[in-house]
Length: 165
Figure 1: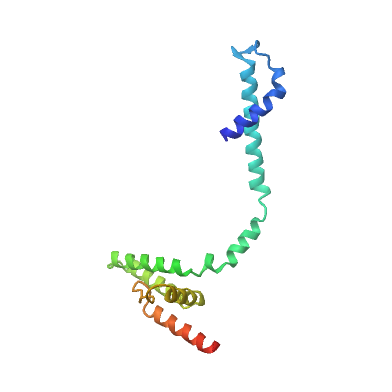
Figure 2 (figure 1 turned 180 degrees about the vertical axis):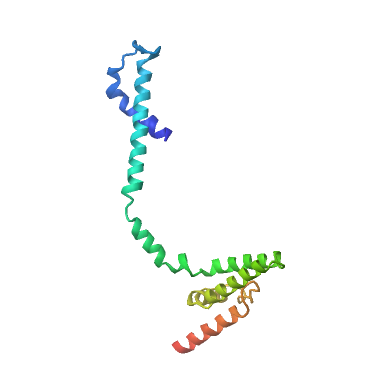
């Protein structure tokens, strides 16, 4: 904001400086400073007004962004494979940290169900296929995810491959 005010004030000043003679004073302050301060105040007011109007009334395509977000499964209910792995790690750490808290364990069990559902989706299979083929070894059992996620994914990948052959 300081750059806006400084730049625009100094760009406007040559056009209005003739109105503020350096010899005149108001309250013992040169009219030059009063002129510069008033231009700066007008610039700040104008920039804030334009920003307010744009934010409140001209926020173009705001509703469309809401629809896009609501229709994006990865913004609502689905997890990307990398996010599922992080969630699995965090869920396992929380489960171990609060092993005596029933509410935490119930939440962890629910997250396990969600992770299992997400890991049974086609996007997980595609990611695991790439991981299996591009790294030095196959994906390990990933103990922080629900049991059997990795093996069941390999079975689905093999079944799809057999169907396409």
